[in-house]
Image (cartoon, rainbow, N blue to C red; front, side, top):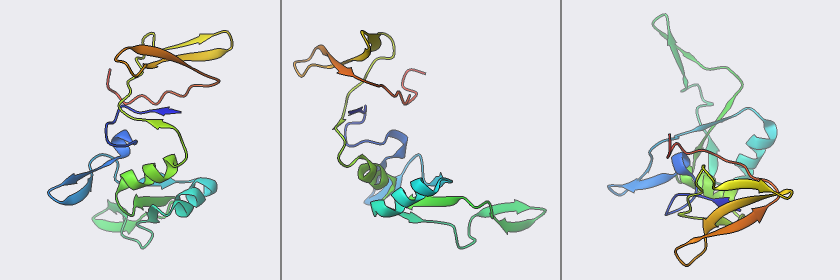
Length: 141
């Protein structure tokens, strides 16, 4: 189960928006893959394409452009970065517009994790899980 604070779709800083009729990646524009299994997953998702492998990505050093040759694969979304997130989230239970408070929102009890979640009636309920991963979005930073 993924609890996401976004209202439209998962991804947060890795989501896309429509602006003046164009799809825009407003935060993360690309991702770098250094793990072969992750690269394969991106390729197999159908939502990502390699970018910059043609020498267009590099650095300017000593007043000269030099293509990066670091062995890393850079990927962009075919239909925006949000498409990558949506493809990787396929088959997962993603619950949108859910804020799990960092203070008292998660507790370990009797060998399981209790997570404070909306109960569907405007209040809070508790959902139980074997494991919890917190990806902080900076909302309370």
